[in-house]
Length: 361
Image 1 (spheres, helix red, strand yellow):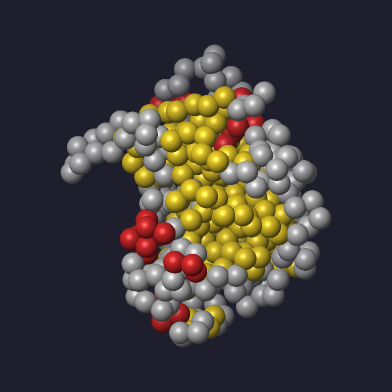
Image 2 (cartoon, rainbow, N blue to C red):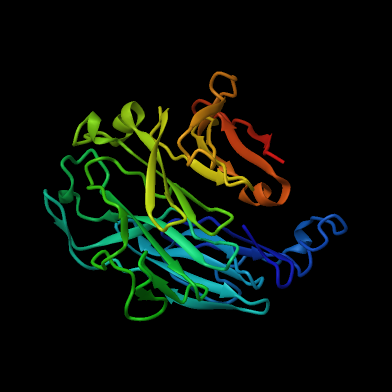
């Protein structure tokens, strides 16, 4: 779901995973006057299988809308499939969608101590603009060939990488500022490019993909990554069981001197699933774990004082797994707003609930 500020429309992209998609958009101005207009189906056009006539790909996955500083709306998505896919961008300028093209590569050879792989996809931890207009993205690679792992029960994700763009996603630079890819061009961001990896890790630790990222008030990027640390062994054989038993989340960030720092959050995952990250207006950090458990750390401490602030398990929420964060409310309303689903059994439906915490004023 995204909003094109240039014309006040709400856009929705639905029902996709390595196949087609469904797209609808509202009438112009709906988001400019949400209280004065009726929210009915008539405010939206007919469902489409293209972006207003723009056919992107027959294997479409992971749509994410991004508002540009000028009020345009971009769509990040993956072309093709897990282990052999490419990231791409499209853009809406208030009158039409255009396809900017692919910007990551699935080719090249990656070799671990166990074997090699010649195909992969880049899984994004996020993609968003900071206040200064820089587009940031943390990522991990997933290899197609399982021979790169110590055990077939793991997952082939390896390394945490970082790229940024200062021209609205047209070209991509590594941490040192070197151009490593051009959207829609022949030179795409590839596993063989130098300077991409900011936290190295081989595929033997069940590193999670698509976790979370956030930029602070100074435009410095932060991310949450999680895996099974080496102190619990150098080979995960069942990624669900091993992450649940021994997985840990880490706060990875660039400091004001340009150095990357990583801090282990002293809270067991107790889950195979993902943790979310937000920063308040003072740049204090909050990690929202599965089952609505929240830990926080202060900027003043250098993010060294991580502690549990709320435990949805002991509070009896009966929350199921991963949660969804309304990132817009963090900045606009000074609230941490969490959507979670209650646990259920079999095919019995369960409730979706919203949990709200007021952030420091």
